Amino acid sequence: MFRFQQLHLVQYKNYMFKNFEFKHKVIGICGANGIGKTNILDAIWYLCFTKSYFTAIDGRIAYTPNQGFRIDGKCSINNQAVNAVAILRETGKKEFSVNNDLYTRLSSHIGKMPAVMVAPDDVIIITGGSEERRKMIDTLICQIDETYMQQLMAYNKILLQRNALLKQFSETGFTDNALLHIINTQLITAGSYVYKLRKDFLPAYLERINKHYQQISGSNEQLELSYDTPLDVFNSKSEQDAFELLFAQNHSRDLAMQRTNGGIHKDDIKFLLDGMPFKQIASQGQRKSLLFAIRLTEYELLQEYKGFAPVLLLDDVFEKLDEQRMANLLLDVCVKKQGQVFITDTHKGRLEAHLQNVGCDYEIIELV
Ligand SMILES: Nc1ncnc2c1ncn2[C@@H]1O[C@H](COP(=O)(O)OP(=O)(O)OP(=O)(O)O)[C@@H](O)[C@H]1O
Image (cartoon, rainbow, N blue to C red; front, top):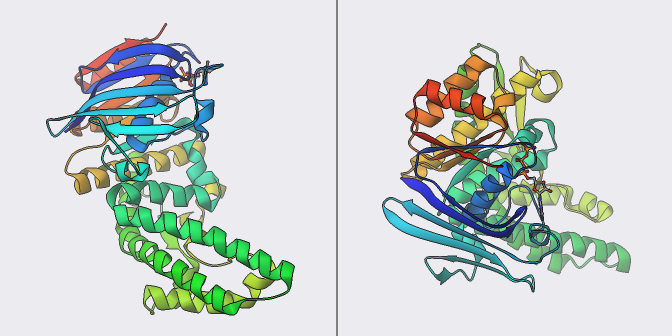
């Protein structure tokens, strides 16, 4: 079991200095727009992922006009006390420690404190570009497989180097094929691992999303989800061979365009509804149902791989679904599922009524 008991914020967004205690399984956080509800969820996310869910640049997090912040979280994971501390020093230096052990590599923390967020802007996963869906897959698999994360980081770094090299070839008018071969080999080694895991992992993941979608939407809509990768053309080959063939096929194009046209950085997930692209024909409600289906699947998979439930962070979800669907979902996540749930809403009465209705063990934090 993974539970937060305390969260202490110093100069984190709108909190100059604030302490929160959590004693229950479900924590409802309510208050007016802009009061800082989401910022609490974000601070929890920060402790789980060593970065903010909403703010890409750490320097923008500190309570304006100060610099630097600190988040202290006390939790228990399978009855072990865990004290996670994230600090951004005024110099811009970032430190992260668990039980006073300072990480030398922040990435080693990923997966130790699993979490799932549902936030209003997340429908971008469905409506946005392919990078949003790759981020969705990677956030999940990185929490499950540490090597995947390392290989993915290596791939992204080498990809930048390869693109810079292609540019340099064009500028100097000289193509160093020997050097390109070396960098291709490095890229293929890292990429093959990521490709293999995506290929092994995604079919069952997508099937589960589909199952959850049918349950949430209460319909028999024909939703099709598939892993879409340029490496597919060589599917019968090993991952390594597929990559080599793809690079060989794209060789002249890569040189002409000065960038790498094929690889796992072009992967996508295709969502089709009744044979049509989901984002083109789905209603708001259908998009929201799919988003919940995605997050519930992530939750379940993390629970299975970790042996304990992740923390679930639900930001402003009441606007997302109709009353009955919301009630069903809350019953599922607040009662049937094991993990701790943080849920924000502007209306205290509505939030409390929902939590009372499902009969869960809850507390309300009212921000004023
Ligand atoms: N670096 C910062 N310094 C000071 N205040 C900040 C900083 N970053 C964000 N804020 C403040 O945090 C507030 C937004 O907080 P948050 O998003 O948590 O609100 P919320 O209660 O979730 O609102 P809503 O109900 O509208 O979603 C804003 O008032 C914003 O000005």
